[in-house]
Image (cartoon, rainbow, N blue to C red):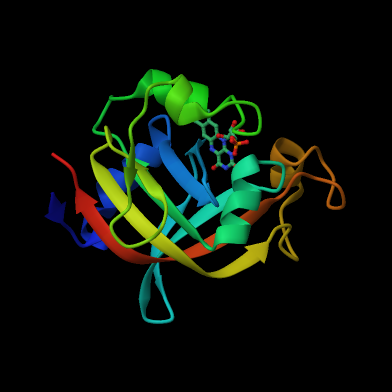
Length: 172
Ligand SMILES: Cc1cc2nc3c(=O)[nH]c(=O)nc-3n(C[C@H](O)[C@H](O)[C@H](O)COP(=O)(O)O)c2cc1C
């Protein structure tokens, strides 16, 4: 395992978002879950390295991250784990245990009480330090139409979870 500065790996991580997504992992009590996440940002806020995870309210992961206050993100090597990303992005942890069903290794995090996907390359562990709810005061109608069924009131909007990056490493 090699410790890294996640911000220095921004290009590879952002490419992971675009190219089929990354794993967003959560744990609440003795339940673990993962979902595919295709959006997000690596950034610096309040003098801390921050990963922002946008999670719709309807996701099972939303409740788990909101309650536990932690999450991890696992970024596969280029082109790897495509099938796993696809199924974890279409099935809910409410209905199945995705790690067991899809034979993904839940490897215990180093700092936070939450697993990472052992088969992935880059691992980022986060503590939620802030969250904010979309819709923003001003969003273009084209975004609302395309992503939120055209309504400012009842759309299944994303919560932006600001996760302080407390550990980041590469599993070879
Ligand atoms: C490529 C891809 C990217 C996705 N990105 C996001 C995302 O950024 N935020 C989100 O809330 N859902 C996203 N999803 C949908 C969730 O992964 C999907 O609804 C998943 O089944 C939720 O699992 P859960 O209910 O166990 O949390 C994405 C799905 C795919 C296939």
